[in-house]
Image (cartoon, rainbow over all chains, first blue to last red; front, top):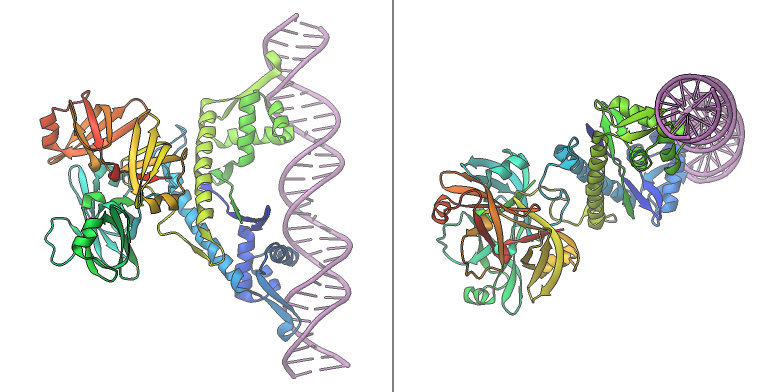
Length: 259
Length: 259
DNA sequence: GTGATTACATAGTATTGATATATTATATAT
DNA sequence: ATATATAATATATCAATACTATGTAATCAC
């Protein structure tokens, strides 16, 4: 049983970006003329022209700029806005593809249920969501250690139950997201001797202090960022200020994995 | 800018369940005949009959059972399998709706980027995902307390950062999912005097012991279930066996919220 | 048996969508 | 001025689809 789906962007209740039109825009980008693009897709010239016209009319800012006559008889090119639209669409399409694949895996047609815990599409409160690749999987009897290589180059270790590894179908090389709460992050300065497996050096970007707690944003290179919520006293005791070099410590068991 | 999408189930490369056909099946379920269903949708009788016929032909197990003649001249009813299909489709559709809504929120058409950190469609390793409704929101300077009423009737308190509340757009009455790791769950028997806000009574359904840790599944009524991973010694010390009445304790700061 | 209602089947008509084709307008190169 | 390639527009043709109309078969209630 296959799952398929289209993706349509609507503007003022009118279909605006459809699969076919995207193909057409791509062809226009490539060939620089509506007539050539229509041949490449393929579709009739009229259909192509109509599509381009309705798109340009629907949109506030034009999608393509058309020129009649001139060198080579004229031509049609995408505007910057048009290119952005194409890019947006391809990103959305990609996300949707991932979603459908997941949905398919998880669907149990015979029972009329989803064989999964929880929702598929969910926004999570956790501030810290770092993406990376699984480098090594060490399986225990109940728990599994996952070694994840982050974009920033840092390595991270997460401990989750074997059941979770199985139900997510985790394998070496998989792209995953490491998820942990801001309150799971401890901060330390200077020499650290602590049993936790995850220690990340970073520079303090910002501090927002409340009455009791303070939110500290840590930057680890350009790519990864960690948010910590610690007590106000700790901030003062450690003398943390923006620009400080501090170490974020996270227990491996506090890190969840999303795929 | 609106995002819309259809959802089609395919069987051996043939479109099988489409939006229209689902409507038809629903009408058949309601009215008990193809002709009445066709009027209700509305569509022509022939189109309705053809649709039903092709569906029944494509599927291994029949979707509807048809009877010609008899009381009232005959009729058409859904089979159990057909009902399951309808249910599956509605679940899938619901998931897709959530996904699209989220996708829309997160899309920045002008820039051609997604204004999000993580992936949209993600399955999380956390075994414990309990759904409920937000009952009360108590906002602090940095953190917010969320009181969630679970399906089982239990109340749960989660503490997350104000930032998270804002970025999820959480409000009183919202349907949310409380997420926490199996290793965040402590188990206790007898009288408990502990500062944690979340204490849930349950019956032990199963125990799976490893060398060091053990996985204990707790049932809180029919609806909610909690999985705890605790040390093997704890299991022995507390004398936990299947059927035992135990108390699950979870720190409010260990509970994340998904929406 | 008659009537009622519905499934099942076929033929013809209408509508729609796409394609094909032809024509005009435009502006540059030669 | 002419040739050229393309946009812009209109009309005619074709194919697919959907709908309408009509008819047959089946079975139970009366």
